[in-house]
Amino acid sequence: MAEKATFLTGSLFRHIAVMSLTASVGLMAVFAVDLVDMLFISMLGNEALAAAVGFAGAILFFTSSFGIGMAIAGGALVARALGSGDAELARRRATNTLIYGVLFGAVFAGIVWFFLPQLTALMGATGETQALSVGYLRIIIPSLPLLLVGMVGGAILRAHGNARASMMATIWGGVVNAVLDPIFIFGLDLELTGAAIASVVARFAICAAALVPLLRGHDALARPDPALLRLDLKPVVTLAFPAILTQLATPVGQAYVTRSMAEYGEEAVAGMAIAARLTPVAFGVILALSGAVGPIIGQNFGAGDLGRVRKAYRESLVFTGIVVVSAALILFVLRAPIANLFGAEGTARDIVYLFCGPLALLWYFNGVIFVGNAAFNNLGHPYYSTWVNWGRHTAGTIPFVIAGAYLLGAEGVLIGQAVGGVLFGLVSGVLVRRIMAEPPEHAETAPFQREARLMTILHRRH
Image 1 (cartoon, rainbow, N blue to C red):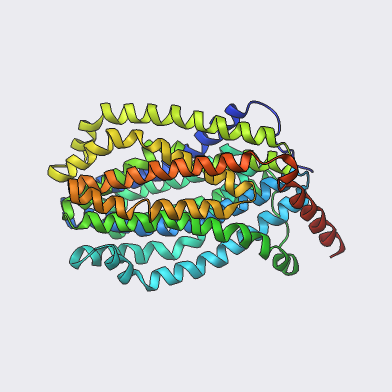
Image 2 (cartoon, rainbow, N blue to C red; image 1 turned 45 degrees about the vertical axis):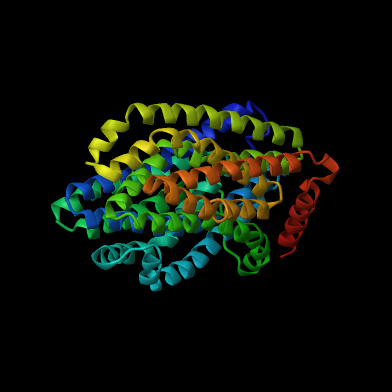
């Protein structure tokens, strides 16, 4: 049965809101558990444990970013195929992206696992804190392929317009983690090891919860075929490679920030770890924007409706502004209770207050970058998102963090990072508008539609 492309009609603002909010609920379910992890670890009263979670979080962000890149590729390929009316191609691309995600993810996880001591040292972890961080990560990292299936599967579900099923996959993972965390951390007295085991079991749950609706609800997967798998390697890599490079820029930049913060002691790192775990809970909607807006742009691009593509981008920016202002106000009002909840004192408390104050408003520019990345990836310019992200997390991070630290100390590290985000948010906006200004005859819908027809013919001959 042919699957209808759901984003070609109806209110774009509604599509953006529904896709972003449902995707963010799933994201926040997972990251809320990370926040609870941090709270439980803080209750143990060991500052080294709290700092270890901070260093480990940066590495896990690094590995998750690989999965986000694969998910972007899978979502874009499936959304375009559905927009052009080729459900058979969509099924094949979904299957082959999942297979490549598992294969590439296993190799990537193996490399990261082997170099964990060097990676944690690179971020400034030493002594007991480094040992705890490495031990925690040794347990979680091998489960990356499971997380990749869940992430790519969720992106494929969103490409079909089923934001609810995508959301529920991550919610189930969050529920499993939330139930097991206190049992393993406190009940079995496993501390960090218990938190790691709970995370692995949660990844099994996410994987299963994403696959079931793909197989039963949408008939979204095809029978694997080695010949067609080879045929799809180029389109998958063409989108996945720049998307992965784009996503890896963020944890690389964050690793530099973590190392810079480590110069001010474990209290500063612990404060940054609290802010890092507040971020996806407070701004989960913004973090979900790239994956949520991508299918909307991708389907309309595949259908050749560039006017609707441009409108989707504009309304995404309006939606971003509404979300950021609302979240920033809530954080500002709750800044004291949040700091008290985690027992943050001294430098750690100052960092939490800073994050819950002016820095929260500057998250609008991160949202501009995320929406821009969705546009670049789905309009045939994936390397633009790579350039913007790497620029933002190198030239837009390192010199600003150095200057901020020199002038303002630990708080200046985060201020410098935020200022760089403003600059590259503006750069992203200029580049997107340049692409959107291209006349329809210069757009890349026609080459994709020709490719889709060619792939279908080859598949039928095969």
